[in-house]
Image (cartoon, rainbow, N blue to C red; front, side, top):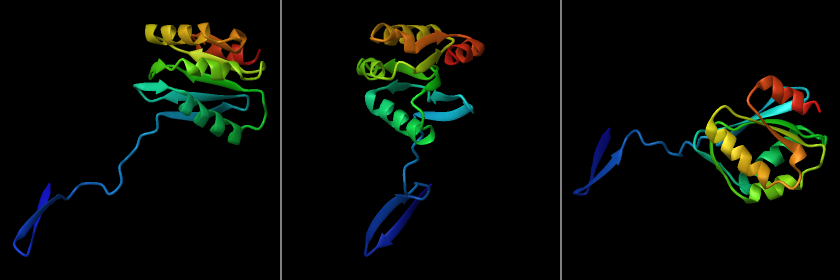
Length: 139
């Protein structure tokens, strides 16, 4: 809807329903699965880059003080992973476990590219079953 205001012979047209601040949807969320792991979900169409990885790492470290990182990464929603992400993940402690959880061919391809670029492939595993993700995190 549009309103028109007449000021000294000049008509100003402005939308009535325009929000004063833009609504920004988060590109990712992190939830605690149980006492031993967290789950990360991505909004449809997200590209995982180093800036986002740093945000995720920062939030994780605020919520979990231990260096023993245990995360299920739901790949659904991701459309790309920047090449520099693998280099950052390779610097993670060897005790890190990231279960790359997916169900589509895109998920499998993205995880394959990511895992191929890791210098320490032991920290990640692509899984298609939630129980397999939990088992990997407990290793």
